[in-house]
Each structure stands twice: as structure tokens, then as C-alpha cells.
Image (tube, rainbow, N blue to C red; front, side, top):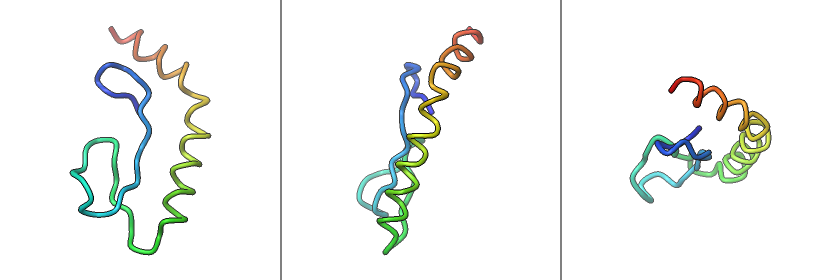
Length: 62
């Protein structure tokens, strides 16, 4: 969940075809906006608490 500069980067759920996908985006489903927003918010809340742990692990690799 980090970009190449080791900065925390979330996952975006986007409308299919609205922009090119990258490693931090996933296609949403037609009619699933509320679900997609809920999944995005849930991931942000629950994974953000691990940010310091992920930073420590990434720093110990190099």
C-alpha cells in the first residue's frame, strides 16, 4: 500500500474506463458506488493503523 517513494498510498475504486488503471486502482462495478465507497473507507480505516509497521518493515529491508 505504498508507492515507489514509500509513501502510503490508498486504493481508489474508479468507474471502468474513466482513467487508466495503476497498482493503486481497481475497476468499480456498475451500480456499486455505495459498496465501493464503503470498501474504500473500510480499507483506509483498518489499514492505516498498520502504517508505522509497514514503514518499519520497508526500512528494515534496505
